[in-house]
Length: 539
Image 1 (cartoon, rainbow, N blue to C red):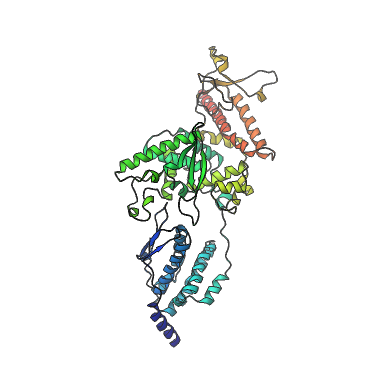
Image 2 (image 1 turned 45 degrees about the vertical axis):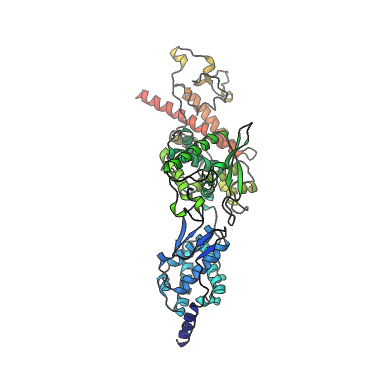
């Protein structure tokens, strides 16, 4: 007891001799960071990220000093986002333990040392209970650093060695992808068709709707994280070939220690997407004009501006990012669009839940089906190495699911891919229409007597250069005959069998099988519609 008192007296005297905490530091991005107050704000462009020490009411000076000194060290060496993650996770797990309240109020070094050991043990037990013990690596790294650099704060070298020897599991990546989780994993083929069709039908020019539509399209086409899109500015979209009207989008890369917008990846923009982005740029200018605030310079104008700037960033080192949206706000645009479309998942029969991350998973999974290499996929997803993309090459995540005929007919009405209308057969009504307007059954299904059966007629006035009858089913000008259910059933069965052959044959491209799905679902909807009509007539 007497030795403990001597230790406490010696260390209490040394508190005043410790290296004082600075009022301001320069982080790893070269930006100033105020560390003099209870709330520390991190220079993360696409988010408002801060940690409030005051909220945790840490009265224990040894603990508080150790946390702040280590955080300053991290902020100078790792990205602002990672420094934030370190303090949030470490304090978050420790604050869940039963001994945390005692540790934060410990008024002597001896009690601090004993309680700190207990908190570490209890935090590890909680992580193991939740199968997330890989988080312990940050906590023990903090303990070890404090042992080396602030040894007078009661961090025991023997305990540090003990924590280093603890075996922890790796962070299993891509669980939602491997398991094809219905709410967190990639969208399945039917859900993706549903979302794409809703986007194609969305022509609203309301400001908010333009932003929503653009966010979904960009996430679908490029598969990036929300922060990539939040960093975009209008001049990132530009022409590279005036003669052929070739547009590109320079998407900022996100690297752990690189400055924001220091590196870019040039992406080709398809003609259909060019219009979407142009509408988005016009909407962005309107939003800033309507805000009444001083607009940013031309080179600083975001592609996805906020309706009003983040005032706490005005006049600070983060001033140029005040008009940029946060990552969560970008994902909210996507979720608002899906909610507005009123989409119901054919898989869960519940409102379709979509996030930027799910669209990223979907993008990657589909690229693997198309035969992309691991290195090319890593580059497309903006990864620095291959370890994060291996999950997409897992056997289960790359298999094209079998499409059951009965299931297809059940799902088809929910997708609403058939936009045409049923008409009576002109032969029956004795009103013979132009023969070139007739849609014939596919050659493979012509009867042995060479009798060519009609599926319906085309409502287009001009020549159709698509590929009937496959292209007819999702077309709004297609007019199937009311008495042609048998013919459509034959086409449907043929398509199902063809898809299965393409899906299961290793020499075939399985992605082609998936590309048939839209035609199959539309054909199934025609059959269901005709059968429903016949049922009404019979009744």
